[in-house]
Length: 626
Ligand code: ADP
Image (cartoon, rainbow, N blue to C red; front, top):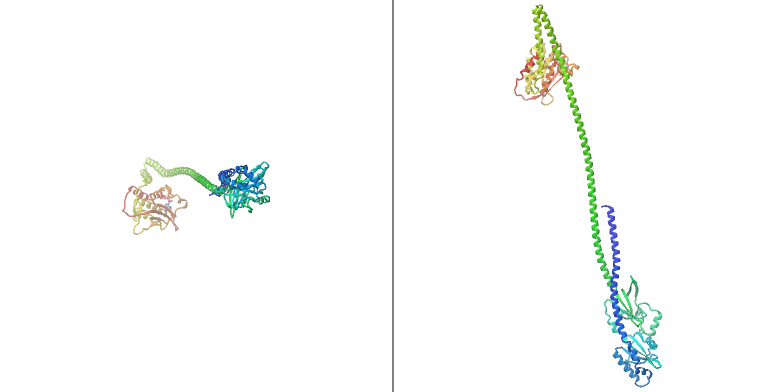
């Protein structure tokens, strides 16, 4: 997870939170206004009904004072008050009319404002003889107009609506007729649970109210002038008018009033309407808390729904982001894999190319080697052939030249009839041809099959047979033979006759090497070699040893240091090949105490019995030994 991702998510969360708070605030205001408009509409209808009701009640009695004023008996009660029975009749008439019309009080005032007759004359709280000239309705009526006035009646404590009309005579206005309508019953009908209904006078004093606590209290502080006027008219029966703890204000175009009642502040939406033909105003105060509650609940629900929607969107966005991130990681991993594969493939291709070039190089080297080998073999063959040709031509040319010479001599001797000498020459020719036949026989041994079978051959028997074969030569040379053969006998893997041929060659050479040596001794030893399973047969003489320059060539065919006619140079070469055919080796070295040592190394074998095969090789061996 990247730091950037976490930062983005935190920023989005903060943004969402701020947006939600703002949305709640704005939504709350908006929905409050919506619900307030609803409340205002309801309040307006309450207001219209209240005003219509009040107006209906008040205007119902508008006609009454004027009508009473026009009655001649009313006028007479003013103008002829001194006459007996006139005032009594007026009192009686007023009572009758008041009862029939349904007004609380009906009374007649003279021009000085003194009540001369009243519907309740004779009763304890009757207004008769009281002066009401200070009442505004009186002054108005004296001006010839309809006087209207609202005031608290100090006697009954009830709110009254006063209507006054002038009593006209030929001399002008002689008095005033006034009616008082009791307003208390109207107020008791205001029982709205949500709206408060107020009737305010021109000074903003609550004259009627659905809530009695607010009665005779002003919404705004009264001016001193207003206070003096109120005191003068005793409108509120001398009650002290205190100010309601209220504050009017406008919010969002909606007029509001906050009223503190004790510790609690209640907010209302306020709507006013004047009562026609009066200086009174009806106000309807509608509680706003229900609107606020509704708006709050609506906003909370809307906000929660919005929050859920936002969370869902954020969830989708995060899921998408995670998916994209995973895809990106997968793509990266894929790219890395591809790069690795490409790198590996490249190194493999490189290694492959290297291998191919190495193989090609090796093949070329091998081919070159083979060619070199073939060339060498060819050269070796040619060299061997050349050597052989030289030796053979030497070996054959000498006897042939001798034969030619002997033949020519024999011819001459026969011509001269020297037959005995001629016979000698022929005899020499014969012996020379024998020698050539011997060479030929030796050469034939090279043509033997190399894969003739080997068997377990007794070393003791081979040494014994070899010495038997060379008996005459040993005797003639006077060589002492020392044999050291272990008991019990050791067998080696070889061919009896061929191994005997090898030993005959070696012993014969040893005897030849000690021709000029006094007390010549040939030592023959059979022993188990250092390497397990190997047996050595050594032939040691006390001669001059092998010359340094001859050491490398002693096993070459036709290499000989002997006089012509004494050696063919084939013995060691044949022996070497025979031992090699047995799987063994033939080595030559000089002994530390002088003389040459030829060692045949062969594999030891389990004895099985002797076979006497290869008569031809045996014969050849004998010939070589002689
Ligand atoms: P040849 O005996 O006909 O010469 P060989 O192959 O048997 O042929 O021997 C080759 C040569 O090896 C000899 O001419 C001689 O020079 C050398 N040689 C062989 N045996 C001995 C030996 N015991 N001491 C010294 N030289 C030897």
